[in-house]
Length: 459
Image 1: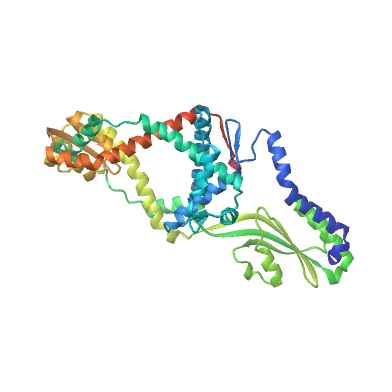
Image 2 (image 1 turned 90 degrees about the vertical axis):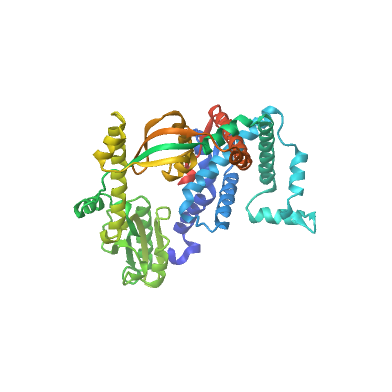
């Protein structure tokens, strides 16, 4: 049978199944997903489907941008897919809103935008051949590219409406700068939790219970069957191979036949080290994975059928991850101990002298120090600026400890210094506020829309 492929009814049957799997699966999958209430595209936004082609175009755009910055994108697949999916959903939401507002991009706008793209030009003029060639290299049809351009232009129209209604008042800028430059005089007490050093026993216990976190070599558990053609004869060997193939396809594991020999069943990290296996079989074994779980090889004297069982990871040795575990346990302890310390201190009256004696730390006196310098010194976020202006006494939880403060005096900023900073920060604040408004607008669209994501694209 396998020896005479062209004449074999069995091989024709296998070829039919294979052809159906590759050619028919896409159609069958779409039909099944549709009847199951699922989607075949990347997402469904208010009943309108976003194609997988548009999604993968966005993925490639993000990958190219990151790689141009020298970033290895291989370990970032999930993050890139997440970002790409949310980006195409936002673009679709904005496009649908532009349609409702009657400001969606026209055919003429789309045409002009494409004609003006330098990548499609030759000697300063649009080249249709270059246009088609470049789109083909990106696996994009002109229709899909024009649809993406239309959506982007329509989104820009929405952004223009937001821009018209956007306004940053002088009072907002003045308030921000005044907070930044106001000078504080007072006492600050930084209290750290006691240092923790995990024992060897703690480290080993964590390692034993979290070995899956320390993956080293990735191996494959496989089983290899051999049918000797010389012993059984070609016809019988054909029949045995056919029956074995079908049983493996049906996930049957209890295969008992003295003429079918199990020559290997173990975890493999390097297929080249498996002994007594022909070279061509070793090469074929490398193709085994959870999606292609059976491979078949015929040599001059035998049939080899191999099946993938599961992926196995060999954990890194304890000595190699010991320091990593130590840092992790220290970080976990610090986080919990900081929270406990904050609750303990903030639940009682704030008395810097008593706290200094109890925790054996010395307070730091500051005189006319700008608030922004205090934020940097103690690694505080900008939203803490108003805290020091509003509360004369207080306790703040930091990432590595607790900050207790007592403010004696707040001095207004110097006029010249204030004016200089306003010129610097005003465009930054305008950009920040504009981006915030855009995000709020998109969030509102998301809230009022029916969005279904195709989670299968992450598999």
